[in-house]
Amino acid sequence: MLRMFRTHKIRKQTELSSCLWDFHTVPEDGSTPARRKAMVPGCWETYPELRNYRGKACFEKNIYASGNIRLEFKGVSHTAEIYLDGKKVTSHYNAYTPFSAVVRNLPAGNHRLRVFVDNSFGENSALHVENDYQTYGGITRGVAFEELGQAYIRQMHVTPEKTPDGWHALVKIIIHNLSDRIFEGRLNLAIEGCGESCSSPISLAANAEAEETMEMACPDALEWSPETPELYLISAVLDDQTGQKADDLIDRFGFREVAVRGKDILLNGRKLRIKGFCRHEDHPQFGCSLPIDAMWQDLLIMKDLGANSVRTSHYPNDELFLDLCDETGILVWEENHARGLSEEAMRNPNFERQCEDCICEMVESHYNHPSIYIWGILNECASHTEYGKSCYEAQLSLIRRLDPSRPRSFASCQFKNDLCFGLAEVTAYNIYPLWYHDTPVQEYLEDLYEWIQNCTEGAGKPFLVTEIGAGAIYGYRSPGREKWSEEYQAWAIGKQLDAVLSHEHTSGVYIWQFSDCKVCAGWFGTRPRTMNNKGIVDEYRRPKMAYEIVREKFGAE
Ligand code: ADA
Image (cartoon, rainbow, N blue to C red):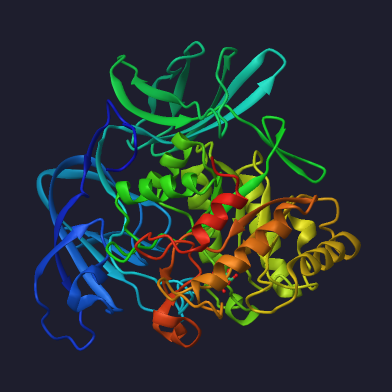
């Protein structure tokens, strides 16, 4: 499954995932590896003998194709090189964002698709590093193979706008002419269930792209909100000059607006109160390639806990998960890929480009999801140094250029020492009173908040606690309430949520974290089981004692 709805009725699209590919590792020593099959999407760590394999591998598949084709990979972890019939067609870094390649004028017949994947760490990888989460290996999200004509619709962004006469949809479409001749035709837009359709003549020079902007009034549109997650399908159809349908693209969006007013984040004019979880894409049976029903179960559990939001810590998530958030009304803080990188790590020569590529791919591919209410960057990186600030500034400015419709933020851990709050609309902090230090929660939170108001450019802005929590080993019970016991975590999370949810200036909280997750081997020293054990449920989604405390504090029905 690629999306929760069909994205094409005219363009021929074949899913190359949800099936087995030929697979073999590429051993460093040049030895001949065993040839086998691998499930795509999937992680090679699910093979018992590859559960700790870090290195290179190759996935292969035959495809029958002719003419112009497009290959789209929703996620390959973490570096991919794509070959067709032995010729390189594209490469990509970062496991968490989609990428595509167009190959022109293929002769009709069978073609060999080879995907070389590398999940090793090193100088070339500034973002996938030994960290407090696992970098898996494989083609970890869906793959699409599409047959194109002479021109195709490459991108469609829909920006809903509330006007005095009701909702409007502002639509920006990019069309690409693949032929060596001028392409002339018409672009037809329609929103299923509301608004009139509209049409515009188009003319593209040979081998060129053009952006078309169209607007449609939808006065009777029903708003998207967490309570009423109304969604609309929008279809763009490209006719050629003979009136033949040359291509199409269908996407889904919701009529909602996000704004910041003083210390509040507003959705459709109403103040948001975030009660959320930070969630890694991680599961003991699937690695980072959770099937749709496992994603769905995570959302059911979050809803049962009374949550209304999820933070995609610390990278863009699978579009299927975002589709489910759109459908269930779960608000999403989505952030680019980075966790806890020092200034030295941010000075890696690949860092800034890899971050900005991730931002472009994240915003361009996830723009239409109404559940995403805010874009985040650079979790707990060096926002306390001048060099770090220059990176935050570049990345936050890039997001503003790509999407002026959503607020921006970043989760800081620089206690009373952050230089970047003037660059974002929302101020956010990760704090761990009662875990990494025993300061009473209310005292710590008020001290931090006063400093933000009196000493930083975060004054007067919305404030979110983007991480708070404590660890517990599932099944470790101790009336002595020692740290790592379920009793301690339940006690601590109760104190933490009481303090944060009663703080009048805080717009909400994200608990760290939803479920226990695997971490890299180098983190074993402070991570029992080589896991991050701060989940409210364990990795198998089994509730810990803290579960009922969170349900009570979040006011679950
Ligand atoms: C940080 C970090 C998280 C996790 C957490 C912890 O806040 O953002 O990824 O590592 O600490 O468990 O300590």
